[in-house]
Length: 77
Picture 1 (cartoon, helix red, strand yellow):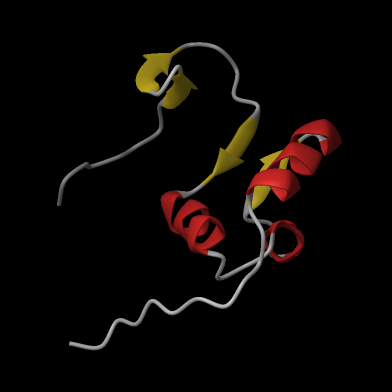
Picture 2: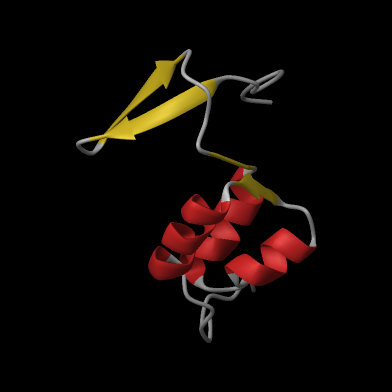
């Protein structure tokens, strides 16, 4: 196991990730973030499944960055 418990807040600023005490704009687990990034799920689907917690303004921004698309990534080994 890499981390016993990941309950910290991180900020991405100018391409650098830093730990911060500031309240987060969005709360999402790494699995959902990965699925959004590769287009496996839409932001609306993640919201429906209660996998994202964010304000409506942030949700609109997320919809701009993460689009549902056909994923050609396979996990066959």
